[in-house]
Image (cartoon, rainbow, N blue to C red; front, top):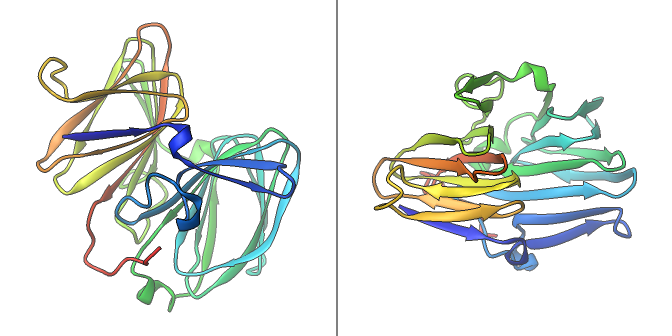
Length: 257
């Protein structure tokens, strides 16, 4: 198992307007000097925070599957398909941008959100019609086991299923507790720590690799063979992570960033 942890200083930075929206980018665009350029078909990941209400004006996208996950606050969406909607804390907007669409986003004051781009086979998806869907927090299945709350956002039990091979979970681990998730051979876990701090590694803490990650850190975990990855909260505070599983390699050409 290989575990790499990237601090906020190793992540790209961005902003909109005169700094009304600021961003840390675990995976950035080429000119932004992020330590991580992509993880398989996981193309881009930004953590945006609004200091005041601000709209990012209409701009185009095509091909990519673009997910907005609201950590807190409200995000408004309008597009050239005729959609005009809002989603609040815990909700998701998903655009499968297909042959092309323009959209605008408005973040209310003190909103935090992830925007994440997944890359399917672009030569195919750019020939399909664009779509937009959104889901409120209550529409996502959530289970609690031994105090650990796991919300499924993308995957077999979740309402969102992408063309890109991917799974996504929001996991809240109480202080001193742990959560284990299978990591198939040839796949990676890409993880952003939303709150708290904890350890990441194999179930056998004495004999398997371990790393520590805190709020804002980005971790990428991979292994040659199928294994289990354990995420463990520190004894004195809960540990919240958003985890995306993607293959390290795909059977189609990826966009050259």
